[in-house]
Each structure stands twice: as structure tokens, then as C-alpha cells.
Image (tube, rainbow, N blue to C red; front, side, top):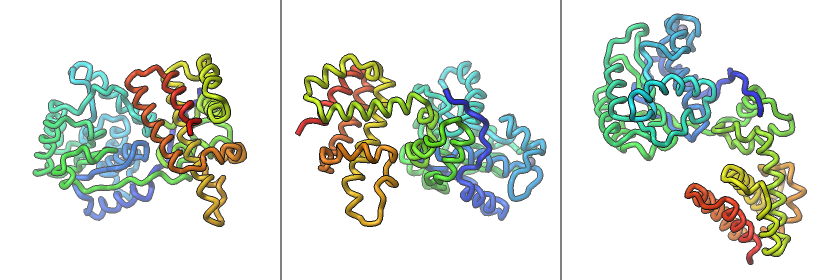
Length: 367
Ligand SMILES: [Zn+2]
């Protein structure tokens, strides 16, 4: 296991500064939609902005030292409210509230809960709304942050719409989601959209260096797998992830060089295919390798581009060459990438992981 240290870097610095500037110029819209894929910093920026809005020493940024900042940092600010998916059971929900926030603090780019049965319920949004309609007690403004907003139940969305139609005074609402299309169109139209782009590769690399102890040569590869989003990046820095990459390449080689019957025998005793987690990891690698092979087969046509610069597994550039001819048909490779998606959904439906992987590998060698 790699050790995670505390992070102090600022993602989306430019975007955050722009929002702060708008606030200080009294031009920040009171209802915002932070939209962008998982792991690009929506949570971090929403919280930094909440601190800036409530700080008692207004400057360009929050001071980090006043009573307001200290309480915001501890998630106990009386004027900052959070709403996110929680279990329906009220006792359970109460117990999970603070741990959710603390986990987001520690791993801001990953999910705080993998409980798919949790939703933003109507009871919780009512509490949130009643807090937001009170007078601010410590700061000049109140801030409400809704996280994973795509998991609002229909009745919750209807209720939110009422708040948006008549926003409470002296308040800001920040709605964060990676799936804006799941929000009611009437909600989207009342929010000022702030689109979060992919993180800059410089930020991704610094974040990895600061938070994880991984060999220098692996930073670049992990950064490419992350592709501008640090969602669940922990999985890419584990030793097992790199070991699985070797296995994935070996199996890919076997698949295109061995008769199907030998391949099946070789795979049936393979421990790397024994459970869903391991096979899912292999799928990530096979996908990156098929994509790389596609790049290798198309890029040399455009002069001046070094294929190894465009590859995810750029250190495999030479090893790919032996397979290049077998993946010359772009249409075939696209089909195989689609097949990977099928295998992924089969695994979610509890299909035997080994059988699913073997069927994919055998398919690679079919004309
Ligand atoms: Zn402050």
C-alpha cells in the first residue's frame, strides 16, 4: 500500500480565482451549478469558495485564521450547510454525516460513500432549506453546498426548484454534479453553470508526487491513466495495478499468438482472472492497450508526432510493435473496445469473471 499524505495543492486555481473575484465585485450569481466529471476538483473549489464567502477578513482569498474560517475547516460553521446522499434511516444518516465530510476532506477526488442505496431525500432537503432561510449568525452570508446532486429523488428536485425560484436572502447555493443531465431542466436553467475542465497535467503530477510514494518513472504513466481527473486515483498508484498491467499485456500476447484451445487451458488456471476486482483491473489495462494500438496504427500518418508521446503506456511503445499488424483494422479495434464495455456490464451482473475474460481474449483472435 502507498501512503497518502495531506494535500495542500489547489486544483482549478484559475477558475477558483475567477469566482473569488466575482464575489468581491458583488457579481457572483447566488445559484451556481458546478458541473464536471468525477475527480476534477468540484468539491475542493466549492469548499474554498464557501470559506471565502464567509471569511471575516475579506481579502482576495479566505484568511484561514478567523473564527469563521476555523469553523468552516472543522465542518461546524453555523452558516455553511451541506446536502449529499445519505441513507433513508435517520439514525444511520446522522451517524454518517460527519464521516462523509471528513472522508471528502481526506480524499477530495473520490466518492465518500459507495452506498448506492443512499439518496438526497426530501426530509434532508427540507432541513437544508430551513437552515438556508435563517439569518446568518457568524458570517454575512450563508452558503449551501449540494454534492452528488444527480442523486436527488424527484420530490427532492421539486423542492429544490422552489428554493431556486425564491432564493433566500444573503445566501449562495452551490450545486455540484458530474451528471447535470439528470437534473430537471427547470433546475438547470435557474443555475449559473460553471464548467470544470480536466485538471492540468502539471497539477495531476504534483498532486501524485505530494500524496503518494511511487517510483519516479511511474508518475507519468499514472498521470496518463488519470487523464485529467483524480477520481479513485488511489487504484492507479498501487503496486497491484502495475503488476496487473504486465499480466494484461502477457494475456493479450497469448490471445493473439496461441490457438484458442491452448489459450483457454492457460487462462483456466490463471489466478489473475479469479475474481471480479482483478478482472476489472485487467479491463482497464486492455482498454488502454487497445487505445494505444489504435494510436500506433493511425499516428504515423501525421508527420511530426512521436507515437510514444501519445500513448498511455508509453513505456510499452517497442513491445506494441510486434502486435501492430494484428490490430491494423481500426474498425476491429473499436469493436473490441466495445466488447470490453460489454464484459464490464456482465461483471456487474455477476457473470463468472474468468469466463467473461476468456471470452473476450478468445474474441481477440477471431478473424
Ligand atoms: Zn477567515
